[in-house]
Image 1 (cartoon, rainbow, N blue to C red):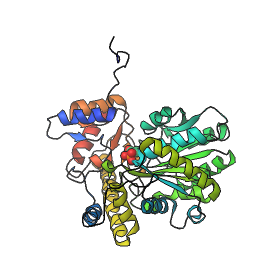
Image 2 (spheres, rainbow, N blue to C red; image 1 turned 90 degrees about the horizontal axis):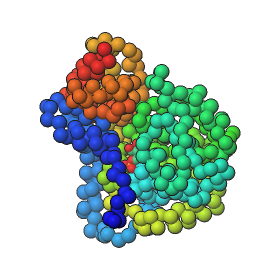
Image 3 (cartoon, protein in one colour; image 1 turned 60 degrees about the vertical axis):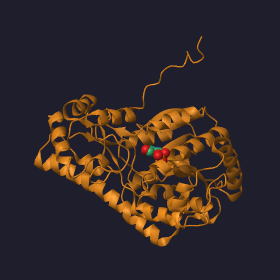
Image 4 (cartoon, rainbow, N blue to C red; image 1 turned 90 degrees about the vertical axis):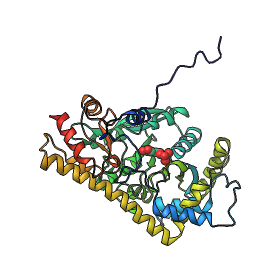
Length: 405
Ligand code: PLP
C-alpha cells in the first residue's frame, strides 16, 4: 500500500479559492471584495512611501549583514513595538514587566501565545479558549493545533448587524473563573463591529472580577481609525486596570508588510520576576519552532518606530489608507440610502470600522453577487472595503441594490 493512502484531501482555503475564481473571471467590471489587503484607488497594492525610504536606508548601510537575530528578535524592534501598542508611558514597560518577542507576523504571535498558554497557563478547567462568534477563521485552527479547544462566545447580532453586548457579557459572567477570552483589539475581523469605550470598560471589569485572561489579537492598529493611539485604547485600558493579558501584534496591514511576516507577542505579567521567567520560556519555545526570527521586516519596522521623522511619515501613510477606506464607507452609505433608496437600514456600513464590513446580506444574495455581477465576496456577506474604489463603487452599490430588492 502507498504510505499516504489515508491522508484525506483537504478543501482549499475559502479566501484563496475566491481569489482564484476572481482571477479566472474575464468580465471587465469584476470586483474582488474578498481580499484581506489594502488596495489603492486603482486597485493596486500600495508600498508605503515610508517603507520605500526605510528600504533605501537599509540598502545604503554598509554594515548590514545577514547574521542570525537573537532568538527573541531584534531588540530595537521589540522595544519599539511594545511602546507602540502599550503606549510609550506604559507602567508595564516602566516596571520591566512587559515581555516582547518578535514573531512571524500576527499569525505567529497568535501561535506562540497559544503554545505558551497551552504549556504554562494555570488551567483549572479543560484547555479551552473563548472565541468571538464569528472570528478570523484561522483562530480555530491555531488553538486546536496546540491542544486548546475553541468555544464560541456571542458577539455578532444579525438582528442589529451590531454587537450582542448582553450575550458577550453574559458569557464572560457564566464562564468558569480563569477562562481565557480572545479579544480583537480593534477593527474586528470579519464583522467590523467593535465595542464602545464604555463597553470595553465593562468587559475589563467582568474579566477582572472573574479572574479571566485576556488574549488580545491586534492586527489593525492605526488601520481602523487612522490613529495608532486611538486603536490601541482597549489594550492600554486593560493594562492600566491590571487585567492579566497578552497581545498579538501584526505589522502586515498598518505597514503594508504582508509578505515580510513581521509581528510581535507581548505578555504582561504582574511582576518583573514573573516577566523574566515568562521570557525565558518563550525563548525556549521560539528556539524549537523557528530558532531565530527573520531580520528584514524587523529592521524596516525598527526604523519607522525609532526615527521620529520616519515615524511621523508612517502616521501620515496610515491616515492615507484609513481615510480612503472610511471615504468608501461614506460613499457606499450615501449611494445606497440617498441615490438608490435601497430597502433596509445601511447605517452599519458607517458604524463598522476597519477593512471589513458585514453587509448583513444572506448567503444566496452573496452568491447572486458573484454569479450575476462578478463581484466576489465570502458567503457570510463580508466585504473588504479595500476592494472598493472610486471606479467600481457605483457598480457595486447598484448590484447590491438589485440583489436585496
Ligand atoms: N488576526 C486577525 C484578526 C487577522 O485578521 C489577521 C490577518 O488577516 C491576523 C491576525 C494575522 O495576519 P498576519 O499573520 O498576516 O499578520
